Image (cartoon, rainbow, N blue to C red; front, side, top):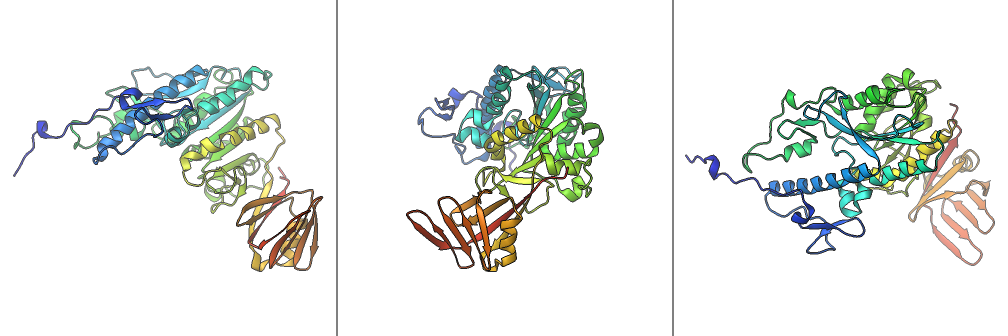
Length: 447
């Protein structure tokens, strides 16, 4: 029987959290690239042993976190430790808030994904596009830069919650994500991961749902102290962070109803039957609010902002995030759309989401009543074919005949029947097979 002593075990690899020592630099496009080959991105696999690769990536992520933290502070964000009474040597989770939190009339709070670090949307986007795009830097700049020209009633504050770094490491006295915890130094490269105990919990923030509750109850509810008494709050929630916000507000809606302006979700996880209830017809219910003042962005190959269907009932309209593959990239892609929606709802309390009914109709089964309903009953009609999705303008004239729909406009005529789609332009004729027709029924909200 062979017994290895501790000294005989392979040592842990050490990678410094320094870009230059790791062999990388930041180019003029704010991208992290190799010093040896400025065209190459970060190389994850450098060894056959996965432990080497993971520790190198953690060192790179630590560099990115440091860069993002410095830039966010330069934009005017400050760190707030939770619990509020905690000291720097005691278990705490940091969040970032803008300096005008107590005076702003509008507050935007972002609950990110539990797998991400504070201020990071997607390390993937940081590596492929830029540091600003993959983190909260570009979003923070967009929110706070408008305050200089805004009136006192339009000034906006920002709160970046931290649903990821909820594990306290006693040795370094730092909060971290589970990913960082797994990459903490071990006695050897073959030793198991550190064991968690109750000492690694952060009081009141043990779990991402607890953290969401704490931010609402101790930060946003502190009206007259931490936030303005009559401040309106816009919520952005990503994946579990959004689910946590929905569940908290659903259980405390009566007390929060006067203050929540609107909600934007990325990768929505809530289910109407489970989290919202079936009282959508009651204008004062949270389900009614979600249906009229909430929108979600989901993975889709459709163009950014295009209404899309969802296999599950989330209780609100779903739109394409302009991202078809990676869930973590929804926020980097759709952040401008989300911010624009929140700004519109802040400015207009009577603005409601239209009720969109999206129905895919196969061309072989198009009947006269379906065509008539698309032409007469819908405010917005989308046509989907092999070339993409096209929205038919509401100001066009549509004539309905038996078996087909003829659309007249100033410069072209489009004829749609069961066999073909024919477009007659001033100097060309295009013919193609009829694919799928998508009807979108847009009705005014009753709320």
